[in-house]
Image (cartoon, rainbow, N blue to C red; front, side, top):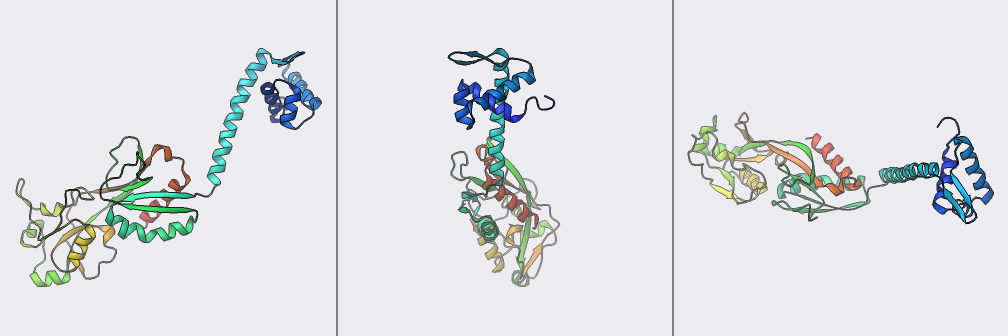
Length: 300
């Protein structure tokens, strides 16, 4: 394939002739005269020193070498067309509706306030935000993408780790003043009112871990003075001075009036994942949303 033997123009003409079966038809497709087509084919045959067509009264038939070349050329042009489409898609602006699901508290407190920046950056994308502490079924397209507080349980989903969320234990200054003591060790929580998550389906695993830290193995968990099935409501209750509670760090960007309790205690891990079905792997709006999340979470 050195020099000018098999340049693209000649191969394009050859391919058109092979598919059309005559110089005339190929000329119509390529917008060239019959003689120009014929000249290109002769030049290609000469360069390769093999005949590519048997010329018959009824038209052209590929020789064995012609068949071989056409198989390769067809393959190459198909690949080129596919590449062209992918390159065009990569410079297209992301557009369309993106259905995003995540837990209530993360959606309300962390994600919703940040969506303005995303929508400003990608004006052709619109977002439908579905907040649910129960996992929606992405395979059934109940949503396009999910931000989950656990690894995905379905095998056919693509997942990207978004990092770790940390638990923080807080009490209000008012509460600590009222009870007159601050816990120094996990065991001290026995003497305090606790605010726990009360529901069969918490948004994150181990949500009530402070009910059992510092207790002997097998001992009953501490009871909550208040149980509520919302992490945000737990934070409101902590602020109001009811007692001590543990909440994820994305809830407490503003810690005014709060005191961090037992900061050195080892808390369970919450791993956050960006999850979507395999068929959306090449979707532009999914990839720009993922990149946006990674950047925003990196700022935490």
